[in-house]
Length: 269
Figure 1: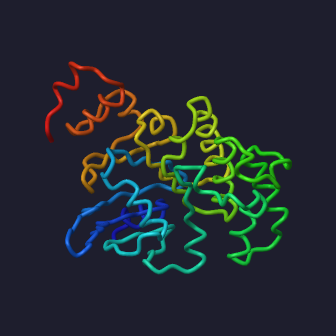
Figure 2: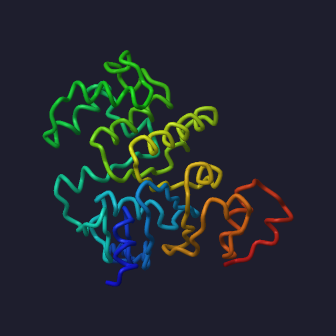
């Protein structure tokens, strides 16, 4: 490895190389990811966008260790990750799911929801960690012994973010974290995520269908289609419409709402 390559590895939090996933049910074989590669700098927020079925969430599931059938390479903070992971590797990558109504146990209090990861990983000072983490997501102590049904959608998503943060991960995976929320609440959650990233020097990977959300939260993005990355761009390219790939440009046009004349010009890529 030359000096430039070594420097790149040291500066990167995540490096994904030639990631490939095949779903094979015996009757059908689906190439869900086909040679996906990207690198994310320490402290960077990176977006994955594309239509449903493009492979975005599959990338997150592989990184989170939820999908163990993959080939390629994943390097986190300079250390290669395998499909089977120890507790340290599991703590380093945490995930916030799309649906705050379904991702929290309905019969557990917020206190138990946040304490459980600490107990699983054998970490101490549980009470203090729970209190501090609730404060970090801007929930007061009065929320600690409430149940999920006693919370609003935005409050539930704050609890889900707190649960991911409490193990002090290096990489936070965000799977459509605002799509199930009211528009008025989405901005609050995005601002909270941006503030937490700066405070804790976190690295984010955000999956979203909403290019406006990606433009607000991410430094760079990868545009995916049928299991492949068709274009890498930065937030400035997105904001000024400088996307190059035909599919990327169509995705950008579609994100602006229905326009009969624009849609009629879409090509069957």
